[in-house]
Length: 337
Image (tube, rainbow, N blue to C red; front, side, top):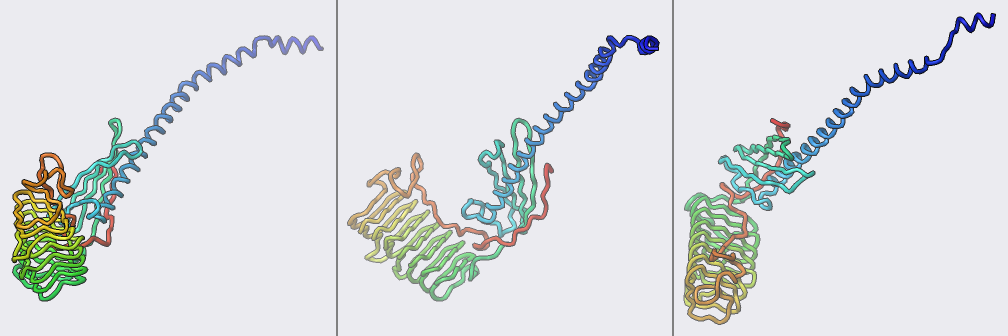
């Protein structure tokens, strides 16, 4: 009986080899596709990570453009957003996530802005397109038509002259005046007043610029005195002193691209003249003009071949008036438009 069972079972030697060979064949058939799948997954993961970095970098460009729109004075964007004249501003941001980011802000008019932000790296790029709607709020308290008159003193308010403007009083603390034409003032400009005149500025009655006032003039300035320590005056034309006792005094800063003609300079103001400076009585001042000192040393002027730079520090030159943006709303947001 025992021998009969052994004959039925037979000899099992070598059968495990067949099983191993079968497993090897199956493994060989599965391994190649599996490795390919893993390689594809790894490559896809790298691409996904790269595109994600590009997306975040491009989104940072959109956010930066939004910040610039809400802070145009700081970001040096054009100041005519309140008008319907289209404009475009391009810039490149510092590297973000190892990506180069190029941003374009386009004003389409009517308070609508188009922002395009493209991040790129090694031939790959991601572009985000956003349309942003803003509401412009006029910042001037008083708007005077061309050739109009503002009666009295300008104090703690802003006045916008659409053309020529006549102010019968002084411009005092808190006063902000922007004039597209010529400005005539019957009294002083004083305190912390800010005045930007695209044409000529005439100070009637030999009146003065005093206090910590900042005055920028696109044409000629006719004045009695530029005095006080904190005064800053920037003139693209000529400065003409009026009256017998006219002058530039008391540590004020006066930068004129044209000629300066005054009776006296005293108490060490800083005076820069782009052309000829004529002064009858110089009693001490830091003078930079023909026959005095070279322009490249003047702290209010630029260096190199440029003789003089009267860069007005005021940011009031918005077309139609100075103001600000509010109520921002993103209307669309598109990836790779």
